[in-house]
Length: 66
Image 1 (cartoon, rainbow, N blue to C red):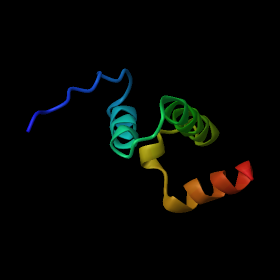
Image 2: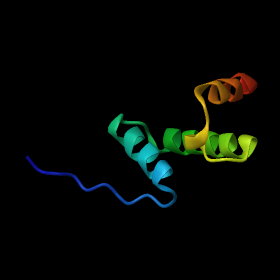
Image 3: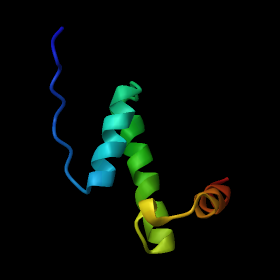
Image 4: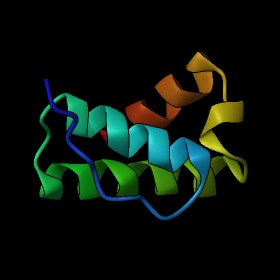
């Protein structure tokens, strides 16, 4: 069994993990870019890192998008 090397992701450890998870799930590069953009909007909306947000805050943000 061989191990495939993935390209390194620039940015925070949270962003790197997010991209790695999306790659593992087979998301297309354009989908990954869109999800990263929404995560960036989430951080700007609350003025803090997404990993510091509660599930309720994330839910409220997502409701603002629809």
